[in-house]
Image (cartoon, helix red, strand yellow):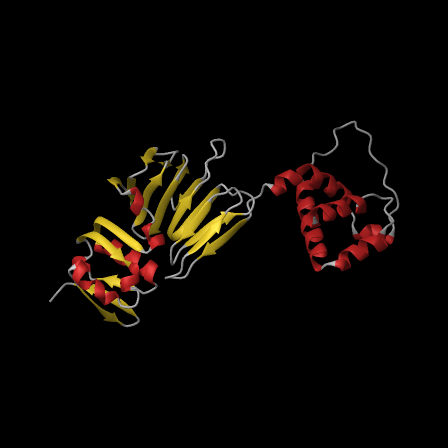
Length: 301
């Protein structure tokens, strides 16, 4: 591994008796990543070296020896490398986040190292960690989590100020400006384990807007239904329906304020309306028409 070799060179270069300059130069020139990782770890080592306590009073000092010209080039590296080796485990435990996102109308499934998989709906972004496959942050949009349960290391999902803890679970989380929605298909999740501690079993859902929490019954089969091309609702406001349609279809679909809170019960087949959202009009009992580069849901005349 490049990091292991770089650390080995840091230690060796810190030895006053070091002579293998040709070998070190050859290693640096063999791959551009070698120099990059060497200097990055040397900088980390220098930072960690500041944490090493000074010699206790009364301890014998080590007499300095004359340094060679090349030795001056890495002056102080040996002390830093000692700290680097002692603290390298800390460095390895640092978060290493990366983002996965989808465009509106696009879906994607990500397999994690622990066996968990995450399906992303359109217009969504999730932050993961290369060094910890048991945590995810939903920045926006919607994701369906199929979690491999580990009682010793439960999977955590963060969405804004809220957090979900898996209890052997398949569940869906949607996050938008109105808050978050959760639906559980299998197992159970714990909502805000450090706060409200609301346990949701399969067939239960939750809506949170940051001020209040509302529980609801859901059909386990309908949770994450967008993955199979359907959206199921039981009294959802049209503003939620329009947001879901925008994600899934890749079209901007707005709803007139006058009917934004009107509730809808029914099932929408995404394939039927993908190319022409206006076909939804009769089902929603509204008028849907073009508005610029998107669509608008308005009351019937």
